[in-house]
Structure formats: C-alpha cells, structure tokens
Length: 363
Image (cartoon, rainbow, N blue to C red; front, side, top):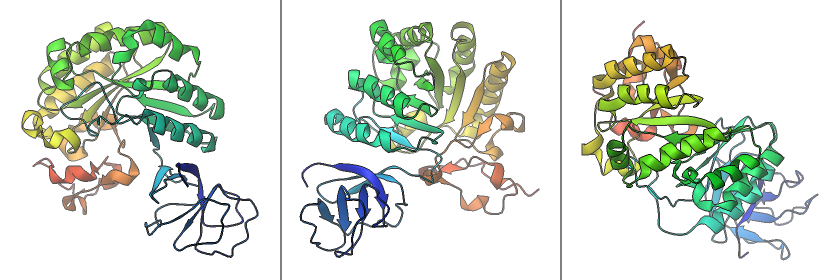
C-alpha cells in the first residue's frame, strides 16, 4: 500500500463497507474490501493491508476514515457526531493572534484535496450539515470550487459551512466561480474583528486584510452567496465591539448571522495570551449591549463558547451549544450546577484558563 485509502469503517466482514478492520486472516468477504486493517499479518496478498496497534475503539461502524501507508488511521466523518468538519489545508495567508490551528508551511493541498474528494461521496445523504475548515480553504483555488460542487451533487440537502478569512473574495471573478456552483446550502463564516483596518489587520497579522475582507463580503453578497460574520472576543476586540456591531448594521445588513465567540485557549492564543487575556465576566456588559443592539436591529446574533454564569441572563436566549461534542467539557465546579444541561460548557482546553467567576447555580 503506497497511497492513502479512504472508505467506510467496519468490523463486519459481510457488511460490504470499503475499509474493513479484522484480525481474522481466514475471514470470507462477501464484498472485496479496499483494504484490511489488521492486528497481525494476514494472507490477503491481493488486498492492501496494514498492520497497526492503534487503538480503534473510538471509531464506529460506518465512520469514514483514511488509512495511511504508515498504518495511521484518521477519522474524517463520525456517524454519531453532530459536527463533522473536513480539513482543506493547514496553510493560511493570515496569522491571527488567537488562531486555534496555527498555519503550517507544508503544501498539503493536493493530498488533502484527494482525500476529501474521495470522502464526500461516502457521506450519508441524510447528513444535515458538514463543515470545511483550514487553514484557508480558498488557497485550493479551483479545487475548492470542485469540492463545493461535489457536496452539491452528492449531498443536495446538506448544509455546508465554510470557515474562511474572506480575503480571496476581493476578486469578483473568483466569487463568480463560487456562485456559479449554485449550492444554495453553502454559507461562509468570515471573521471581522473591528470597524477599522488598524485593529482588524493587527488581529489577523496581515496588512490590507480589512480592505480585502470588506470587498470580499460585498462581492459575495452581490452574487447571492450566504454569509455569517464571526467575531472572537478578547482584549483587542472588546473595546470596539459595540462600534463594530453598529458598523455591521449600517454597512453589512446582508449577512445572515453574527456570531460573537469566546476565546479558545489553544494554538496561537497560548503564545499571545498577554495580548488577548480578558475575563469574560469583565466584558459582560459590553457583550450584553452589543447583542441587544443587533437584536433590536433585527439581525440574527448568537453567542458561542461562553457560559451562563458569566453572562447576563438577559442574553441567555442567544447563547448556543456550539462546541463540538468531542471537545466539550465542564469544570469541576459545574458538577452540582442546576443549569448544567442548558449551559454551552467549555472547550476541553479552556479548562486551564477559566473565568474567576465560574460558579454553580443552586436553583
């Protein structure tokens, strides 16, 4: 086996799934698999096989996986997960101070494109939503257009949410390519961190990014492409948050949704924490005013990654359980909380840097 193999995972030799896991070298397969994952050598000379000691207990029947020549097995799609996102590339043309997945220099576009191209047709058509993330997905150029078209063809009823910095969309010709796919279930989640270039360009560490992003937003809107704006809340963005919300209402009313997001304590955040750190409890009044302003202006707004006990109860209806199930957790102080079921919880890695005002509700 010289190249990665993508397929559905199964422990049942008679299931017909494309990637079979078995340690039974004498098994008889009803449908010849693409590969066999074994705990010991087997005799299937005509079928690619990999011997691995990797723990496969968390991979479920029907999950879509990629099997690599070195024996590594990565889960691309979990059948029992509510959030499934496909990595387009780890490269990026921005270096955001709080990037949760710092960009890498290695050119991985061709490899990941091929893996994702093979995985998408295997996704169940009943899947309500999937995501594309990076790095920056638009660095794939026309390959990105191909993939959103593939989703449209194979998953016509599935919502596709793409995280992008939006800078590539300053090129109207490229936006027209995106729009021409005609995938009306496609939405871009694009960050905007201020109503001015000074703060936005500082946060994303890229000169000219604000102008490119604003131009990109207008280009997308002019071609009917759906947009969500994302604002990560930290020391650099909080002072201008209300002004930004007013800017959005006055200039970007075409966006479908505004997501105000608590900071993740991972990636670049750990290295830039001194520039970013602010207790969410200390900005709850600004957050409340900003949320209520957008709501009064009839703009859809949500708050992600923040907990009930550090936010004003008046905005609790806007808090969302947005953290993917596999990385959602609670602090020890939350064990006895009577509102735990309604609370969005924490990123697992954020438990290292929680607000000093986290507390359990008693009634």
